[in-house]
Amino acid sequence: MSETIVFDRMKEADWEDVRDIYIEGIQTRNATFDTTAPTREEWNKKYLQECRLVVRDGEKVIGWAALLPISTKDAFYGVAELSIYLSSASAGKGIGTKLLDKLIEASEEYGFWTLQAGIFPENEASIKLHKRFGFREVGVRERLGKLDDIWRDVVLMERRSKVVGAD
Image (tube, rainbow, N blue to C red):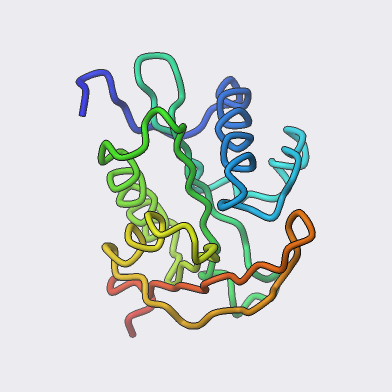
């Protein structure tokens, strides 16, 4: 990794780069069911304020990760779904590994005991990355939704913290 690579909390000024990276993910057709990028306001409503991280190469954001609540019920305040996206130019350089490590660390600092991810089975690199951090495959949600008129399965993965909620 380059000396100019910095992991940081997301700032409002990062939005355009975050959005551009999300659009790259949309275009792969293997990262999300979304077909258009959200507005800044929609994105801010969707993702928790805590645990919004970016990776910068110099001034340019080349990756991001954030948490979404899975429920509004108090019993599930420590469970979140994660999103992690890298620019295509930064894939395969170990940046995703470091970013997921930082996100897990931040999630535990904020009291999250379970992280979950829904990943298209075709996104083998993402599945391998998550397994490297102790995520286990809970199951496959078959034909969960259509993307481009094609039914898609989603692999549901989860990771239980050994630090938070271990009582």
